[in-house]
Image (cartoon, rainbow, N blue to C red; front, top):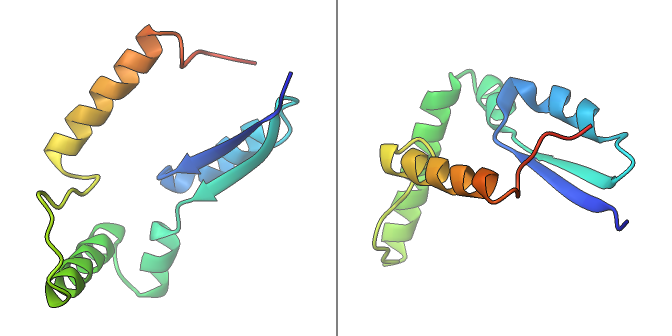
Length: 102
């Protein structure tokens, strides 16, 4: 069986737990954690939500400065985004793409 590479994104304080679950799994080659928001917010002396609000505003400001257009600026905390992701994960679970393992 080919080993898989796994990315864990946006799991905040649970990142270490997820990594410990999967890093020694026989079918997992590497585990990547892409969640620095809490760490960066703490370094900036801010709450995570305030930090990402500030970051999103800065990204939009830069895009506007470069005259970059977009149909919709989506944030992971947007209600629309959350509902769409829930639909996707429910479909993946229903199709057997997500399942309980070892």
